[in-house]
Amino acid sequence: MDHTSETEYKPGPLDGVTVLDFSRVLSGPYCTMILADLGARVIKIERFGTGDDTRAFGPFIENDSAYFMCFNRGKESISLDIKSPRDRELLERLLDTSDVVVENFRPGVMERLGYGPERLAKTHPHIVYASISGFGHSGPFSELPGYDMVVQAMGGVMGLTGWPGAEPARVGTSFGDLGAGLFGVIGILASLYSRNRDAQGARVDIGMLDCQAALLETALARYDVEGVVPTRTGDNHPSLAPFETFMAEDGKFVICAGNDTLFLLMADALGSPHLALKPEFLTNDLRVQNRVQLVQDIEAITKTKPMQHWIDALNEEGVPCAPINTIDKLFDHPQLLARDMIIKVQGEHDRPVRTAGNPIKLSNMTEFDPEKPIKAPMLNQHREAILDELMASHGAYDVVKGQNNDHHADLHEFYEAAAPATN
Image (cartoon, rainbow, N blue to C red):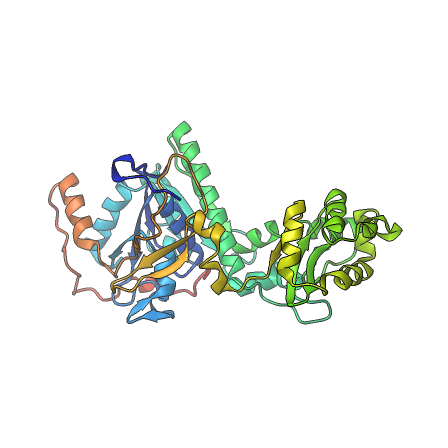
């Protein structure tokens, strides 16, 4: 993809929005990463000494965590000790100039520190306050900690993942955290939009379990209609056929012929148009009922040639299909490269890390240059600059510009007084 020159640079739509990010590990940082990708200024509030837990998560490039870099690219970092009057004053000044607060602690932690949503709604009514927790801030489970796998299990997703007759399986990525982060972004953007109308901030309360329920597709409705508990279906779609993997001469690949027209085209691409005329395959419902025979009949054909032969033939007819790529194949995937979806992030050291870019493509925003690494902040890297900025805008006031060596409680109230609400 061509990149605009510096004179044609178009900032993201959230340019001018400042986010105070108290979150750590994944759900909150993923949410604020997206906001940063869309142009927001994200100031990451971290504890002295260790910072975000993920700074200690591997893999590492020397002392830099690739995990941390991926989800904290383009952010600023400042360490604050909330027990220090000077740092509390600094935080108050930051709140004055911020638009959004994001936190992912257990309910009650921010309130005990004096920065809960009810208090900020009175003192800083312009702020959009987003909380991401395992179970939200209401209901009988609200006080419980909720890690990704906890909500995958409780929310039914693990019960739908895996092979029939086998054990339930965790989704291969942190589906619970990532889903909550995405819904958090939606809530924040909707609240910023409404603030333009009524000049009032809002509370965004995201529960990971709620998000898992919302991502169950039609599983809840299927049970309500059919009275049969949906369970693991392996690699096939429970309501569509053929919509699964098939064995070729050299391995498995995917065919998704999700309607009758595509099934006819698939049969032609396989060189067996008579397949579409078999009575047991005439409709999608019949194909679902006769899935075992359908798979056998298709594989009797596909096993005779390499998968690339079939993928080419199916693409020629417009039938959705794909190889089953391992992660290494994505780095050189022509479609991902063409859309700048492989970018580089970099910490303190010279060696950048490749990761996924921003999938939200906007005509009024300049894309990241995949050849220019996006920096992830060192711990407390931006304290001096932030203090200088606040002093310039508010006049000099008594804030220590270096680390506050008289106070080492750091953010223990945030990070250690309560178990984390989310990953």
